[in-house]
Image 1 (tube, rainbow, N blue to C red):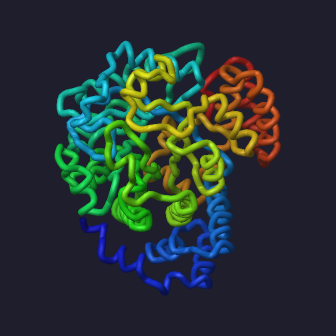
Image 2 (cartoon, rainbow, N blue to C red):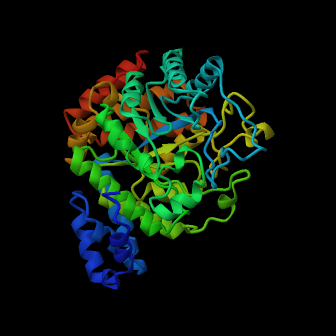
Length: 463
């Protein structure tokens, strides 16, 4: 664990000198240049208790996020292909010893049907998720699943980027995964605290802490450009997890020149027969959760911060203001749940955890517009080779928005025309016109031409 120094992290958490409001305000002011923070500076901001300083932190997190990514929110949905798992994680419904969970691995036909459902809703990005099993479904099946998803085309709509959340692989296996045409490889350490990790993973291949911790290095060595990390908040002190996760991000960036493309911040939610999930050892309250999201944004300004539908709509709206840049919408966390009745008993017997936001994609899109956020379905960077270090250079310099804004507008116009309800369409069209007017020349003219092509029936227009 060369880059996770538990003793140093704990010393930062306990350092009373980092509670000084003047020092905290100096750090907040420094963070406005969107160049990131040190671990010590991040620890100082996590220690903020003063309400005025906390509001300054929140305001600055929004400012920095918009400096890099503007007011865009990228939307996606997870697609679970199996809940069969050989691990025994105490917080997860998929754990091996949960005999009440209804197990299912989708067939390729069922995967196609699930993908068709998501395409008909307007989704363009999918996160493929699978439990860990040496043979079921196996890497070869993951490849066939991805191929099946990419082949779904319905009236100009299709999935244009598939990110993958599967168990850690060898370098050669990661090379195979890359050959499937994936976007980001995502894997959460769950908890970076070694003793806690061993308690939460009593047996199964996931018990190997180091194998999971170094998965991102093997993925990068295999040529996968974009990787996503995360921690499951509630298993250990949130300050420790945040600082350890930032240590991971800093390490990857320093060694490979490619920090995490995304950082996910799931909180522990109740799950069927998962004892730890019912009473989290270190439950994170809403204020602390908002604080850690804001600190991550200031410490790693270039990363995409992902917020899932674990959280209830009211809190999700608040977190949009604190640095979140990617959100799931209309999500289901069990295999086959999209095609089946969305609130069926069978679904709840197969889901990984309980959701807090049950709204449809259309409802979330409308809400985003009303809050002043531009829903983005853009996947242009992935297909224009703006990935890995090329993406990082654009994001770190704040230039990614020059490409993202026009492409977000183009894909959003596509969504409005093809999928939006009449209620959403009315709100969205007015919002979109205002977004176009905000653009500077010549970007504005280029964007108008792209929108005209979409209006004329062309789809997947980007530059």
